[in-house]
Image 1 (cartoon, helix red, strand yellow):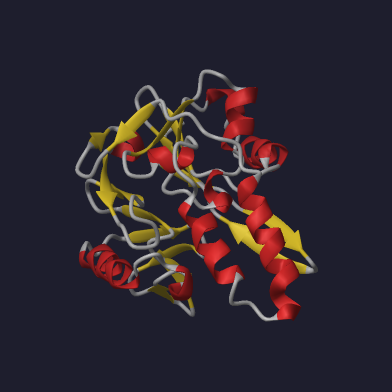
Image 2: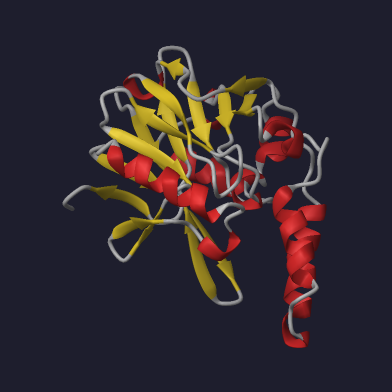
Length: 233
């Protein structure tokens, strides 16, 4: 396969509302790397989507998790169980929250917000918190850091993009042909924006990360929420 990457489209329906998430597969000399993996219970959906692009699920060698939100990490335990040789990667800051050494920061935030919710939103808040309490711990096989280079996607580097969570990372092609944003940027109304500003753990840092992302002027930005976007497109 001579493609540098493949954007996936995982489609979910919740209470008659559709949500599409966009993990990315990066192809390297020896590795096939999946960046993020969708909600818990997504294994079959991932398998179908990979097979659609003739990517054997068992060919995935690494799973890189950009941060600790459940729509990005939820299927990690399932993938590891189905394909035990997959190596899971994340930043050192995110690692203790992923492996269960520390309580997930999104859960901590949600529990604090739960106290402020009006009665008609309490049930939704309880369900959200329970989702996070049920997340399975994820063992991290390799810690990645800002500035680290890999041959994936024709050559890329890890970029620290904190704010949404403190250890959030993105992936930039060395030749600036693409930039995988995770939740450091979302595509809204035809432009890049901060993802869910009210839920950013540090909104000022998130805005700085977005400015840095745009400063690179990559040809294509690949957002987990929104898909692909080209400058001037």
